Length: 569
Image 1 (cartoon, rainbow, N blue to C red):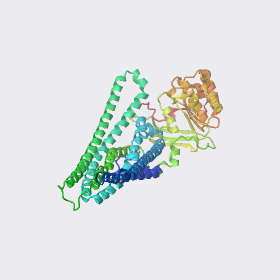
Image 2 (tube, rainbow, N blue to C red; image 1 turned 30 degrees about the vertical axis):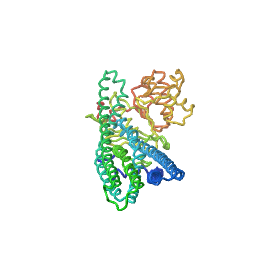
Image 3 (spheres, rainbow, N blue to C red; image 1 turned 90 degrees about the vertical axis):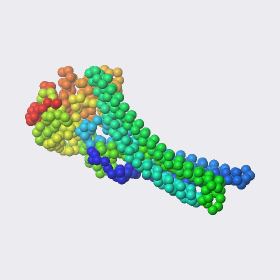
Image 4 (cartoon, rainbow, N blue to C red; image 1 turned 60 degrees about the horizontal axis):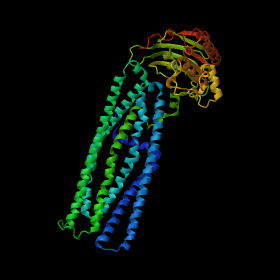
């Protein structure tokens, strides 16, 4: 996890800029189109002012005005095309940046390993690649192109205003700096409010996701109304923070409109009084064409600032979102995600099979669950020789499953060493409560081997005794089951997990009560298939079954592994 301290603003902006690297060419194209469309407004204002001058003052015949109308139509068409193309390019760039950032976020999450993932609410983590990444889109597709326009178009318009009339140029020059000053002050509050809103949204998502998973338990214990009240309170908190952001956005727009309106009004008053002869600041009389050009230019001079104000909270939201992501993972340090680190954290399904059965060495293992006061395993020691079949026995709750989870990499020990040699061996783990996804039985089996053929699936299912119940289902292995194995018994779910293990073809087998809830005949056939499969492999099996103990070469009481047999609290 990254340092929780807030980074300096310059560093935050550098991180945002680094994310745009994959789509930099498209973003530059969007900037160019937006700037080009803004500069064409100067030409449009000049053509319109000249056209009005010719009609009202010079009394030019209509036939001679046709080129002006054609030029105005051409300028409008080109400007519309540039705006459309710029929006397309910026949207495409934003989608590319979001997609690559989501890939990075997910890579970092999985690279942190199962123990790290278990310590954080899944709803909160899902928000990192969901709402947090979504918060960046308007920054790249809206804020950045408008900022590029603001850096080029208003200065050019200011030069044009000075060329037309120095007093108008001076008014625009003196009123412009007041707007960014107040917007910066408002922006600081907007960023802080956006960060609080994203944090509250993450907490609400995690809270809601956890309640959905435990919906059955909530109903059994009659806690439905209380949990609904908690969700309503969390949603109301998000609503209040969202309204606070809207208030800040309206405030920034009001500040901009106030100063822009004053500036435009000053220009209009000056031009009007000049034409009435009440403000003799010019040597030569003011032409209608010049006045109209300045009047048309003044609102457009502030238009990019107006658009920037509309997107300014997007910048604050993007900074807050990236900072929240950084609190969990670092998304812009590629060295932290080397192939070696990823391979150690992810399941080793693509590892090279070990030349010989692996050996297991555990020394001084200590593990305690968060929030408890006693160690589940304290000073545990275990040695399993290559190719040995060991049955781990002991009362329920003594820590057998915990030891298997540590060996499988699901839990991280507080201290001690856990070695499996050689490192390249494949590990297969069939837990006591296997997780089954919504889908068919075949889909759940293919998690272990996506390229498995129907024959492979049937062979593994037959060895794990899955076909004993699957053949009586309406569609066999293609029968749909609910999430977490809804519709199956505990024994049937364990057999599917064991079939997945067979498809994985591991060197080290870690089995947690593989024969629980099975009738004697099914247990006998399953153990016979397991004995054949385990030949030339190392096996550690937690079990209470006498029949399972008889197939093992060594029976190891858990008390011989853990010096402190602390029950789970």
